[in-house]
Image 1 (tube, rainbow, N blue to C red):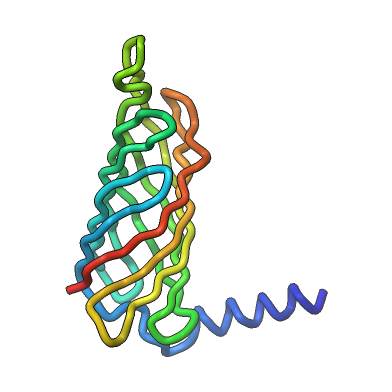
Image 2: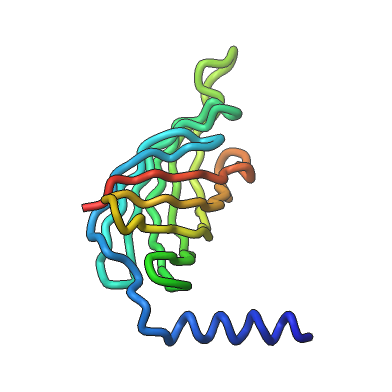
Length: 150
């Protein structure tokens, strides 16, 4: 019970704190993990961002495009938790001995992001499964992200 109360107080404090959510408007970089690719993020308000990802999942031979809405909750100066979701579209089993499979679905996302104060760089770690309506699910989609921020 004490652990729950501590987490609740931390969460409420983070939501209502005056800590700055992000210090950049655009970020472009690499998505590293089971899905390797390019990430572009644009803040549309101090705590809300749109992220586009073009990735290739190595295990499923799956090129994929995801478009996500992310809400940032400041935990400390330049350190944020993010959560949100969006849609994904792509193909699976490309280049294997049978036809590729179309995939389409939703992608929830949760993660952490840190903006380095002495360089225009952000570092992030997130989990973004692909819950597909067509094609099989991709539950292994965690990523480490490095972005140039401007």
